Image 1 (cartoon, rainbow, N blue to C red):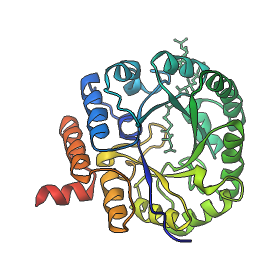
Image 2: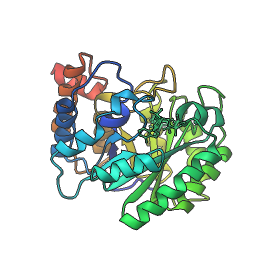
Image 3: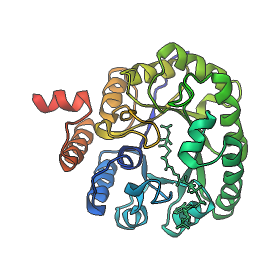
Image 4: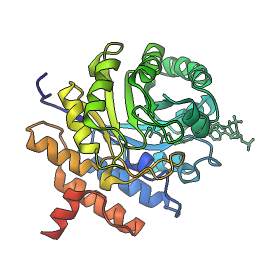
Length: 299
Ligand SMILES: CC(C)(COP(=O)([O-])OP(=O)([O-])OC[C@H]1O[C@@H](n2cnc3c(N)ncnc32)[C@H](O)[C@@H]1OP(=O)([O-])[O-])[C@@H](O)C(=O)NCCC(=O)NCCSC(=O)C[C@@](C)(O)CC(=O)[O-]
């Protein structure tokens, strides 16, 4: 399969990147991050989450963040919604695209959203219905597609039915998440090969965490499988509160650098993206998790 000529990066830094942070981050800093990412040319930014603040306190201010970002035409500003309550809160905050999230492993589903996989899918049904009524697009996530922190190895055959169900419910795109970053390129290729028998490749996305240093290789493996949408996080921010030891998502800057080297278009400005990552890393008081950003800053 030839490489795509264009790739869409779904920037999950403000949500997946920040949700695990223990230190308080002001609404102003979150807003600045989203505005910086808009200016860098991202066409899709996951801004926050309408989940229980008891479960994920860092996302509690998402409505305020939405109220203060400068939304630019042509950019999708999305949020997670785990249930109808979350969807209604998102709607009230003016969100135009939401994401529902399921898992391929029962244990992770219980720890993350306090219900079984099948109960989670039932919870999403009224969201899909309400979304249709309000003209809101819904993206779907499947977590633990290449490994689970509680159950170990996860087979592609476990992932495919969950992904298919989300697709059949009306999710326009299904993102497959290597939540704990244990996947390798061969497993990634097999995963997409199996799932693509159920969902068109153009409607699948890859979401790789870099815990084992495999994320960029897995993005490349996915490109070879005809996947052209990837979730990534500026400065490699992130981790999942319900996957102990999980490190950040693949850094957006590193993915962009590789795509540029492959001659693949994204519409994103690398220098501006690096500046956005440097700024939030300074706010968080930590080293930038993007190797490209570190290398460029050292020049
Ligand atoms: C799903 C629930 C709510 C179930 O949690 P529950 O405790 O079973 O829910 P409940 O319906 O019994 O409600 C309990 C309390 O939460 C409130 N509540 C209920 N719903 C909401 C809501 N939407 N917003 C605000 N509050 C809410 C509700 O009102 C009630 O409040 P109380 O009466 O105790 O004061 C909870 O488990 C939850 O919020 N989980 C979120 C977990 C999460 O955000 N995880 C991280 C995102 S997933 C991820 O990172 C993976 C991904 C997507 O990036 C891909 C990958 O890498 O794999």
